[in-house]
Length: 275
Length: 290
Image (cartoon, rainbow over the protein chains, first blue to last red):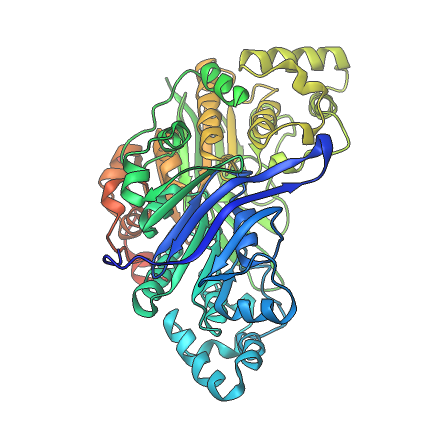
C-alpha cells in the first residue's frame, strides 16, 4: 500500500468496446470505469472471454475504444495518433504473455535491447541497459545470448527489461507469467513488486489466475463478459467478495491446502449452461 | 481393490543426433483400482514422456530402453524391440494428449471423430452402433446428445474438453492417461471436468487415471496420490495430503511453497522462487511414502 497519497495516474471512464455488427456483434467492454493509482499494482482478473485483454490493449492504445474516455496524467489519450502516440509509448510500456513468440529468435538479447536504445539515445541507452537488466536480476553477460539459450523465466525477464529501457511510468503486463513454471513465476512477480517499490512504477497486471492477483495486487478489478462487476482493495475483493460472480469464481479456484468442494456434475453443468 | 497398473523401471530416452536426452530415468509407479495418480513437475521434468510411455504411444525420437507394464496381471515388456499389441492402445490404456480439444478437425462434425475412433478398433462397427454408444455415454455424463452433430467451433472450450475426454474413453479403457486436461480451462470448467472424471471412475467406465499436470492445486482436488518428477526421476511419491501438507524432499518443498493460491497467507509476503537447476535438489534421495 502506498500511504494516504492516492492520486490516479490513469482513468478510464465509461469505456464501451464492440466488435462486429448486427447479429454478430460482440460486446467486449460495457460501461467500464476504473482508475490506476500511481505507484500501485492493479490487477484485472476474469475468465477467458471476459474482455480483460481487450481492456489492456485499449489502455495501451493498440486498439481504439468505441466510446468513452481514457486519461493519462491528466491528458486525454483516447484517440492518440502519430507522434503523440509514440510519445505516449515512452511512458506506457507492455509485456505480453508469450516470451517464446514475442522474441525474434535470430536476435541476441543485446540486439533486442539496442533497438530500444535508439529511441532513448545512445548516451543514456548504455547505462539504462545495464540498469534495466539489473532491475530484473540479470547482468550484461546475457547480452550475447539467443532466446533458445534461456529459460522461459529468463526470457520474460528480458522482455520486462526491454520495457524498462523506456523507464515507463505505467507498465502493462498481460498474462505475463501465465506460461511460466510456478517456481519461475514467483521470481517474475517479485521483479514487478520490486519495480513498484523501488521506482514507484504503476503496474496493470492482467491475469486469469486469482492466486497471482492475490499475491501481487494492491487493487483487484473483476471482469465478466465485458462488465466490471467488482473492484476494490485486494483483501476486500478476494476475501470478502460481494458480487455473485466473484464468489463463484473464488469457490471454484483450486486451493493447495483445502480440497475444492465438488458437487453433482449435472448441477454444475446446468449453472454453466444457464450463464 | 487390487493393483490396476504396475509400471516398472521405465527408462525413456530421446535420441537426437548423437546427443541422447534421458527424459525418464528408471521410474516405477503403480495405480490401484479406482485411483487417480497425479504426475506433477515442471516443464522438462519428464512427466508427459512418462505418461505417453505408459499409454504405449512412445515413438521416435523417443525410445523406451527398459521397462515393463503390468495391467490386470498381464505383463507387457516395453523396452527395446518389444511389440505392443495394438489392441492395447485405446482399449486397455488410452491417452488424452495435451491440447486434444484443439486438435479436433474444424470441418468435421464431432460424430465423424466418434466413428473414426470406433472404426479404428473394430472395422465392422456400423455408424449407428458407434453413434448410439457415444450418445449413451454423453447423456450418462450429463452432456447433451446434440454435441454429436456439432462442429468443434460451436462448442465452448470446457464442452470441447469434456467431449474429447468422453471420446478418448469410448472403448472403456482400464487406464486413462490425461495430459494437462485442465490447463487451458477456466476454473469452473476445470472443476466440472474433474467431477466428470471422478464420475467415470465411479461408474467404472475407466478404472484408473494418470493425471499429468504442473498445476498442484488441481491435483489437490483430483488425485488420490501424487508423484513429483524432477529431471526425469520421481523425487517424492505418496498420498495427496501427505505430499501437500508435509512434503519431505527439498524439491517438493520448494514446489509447494511457490504455489500461489488465493488464501489470506499469500498476501503481503514474499516467496522466493527457484533458479532453474539446482544440483542439491537433484542429489537428494527420493522419498516414497507408503
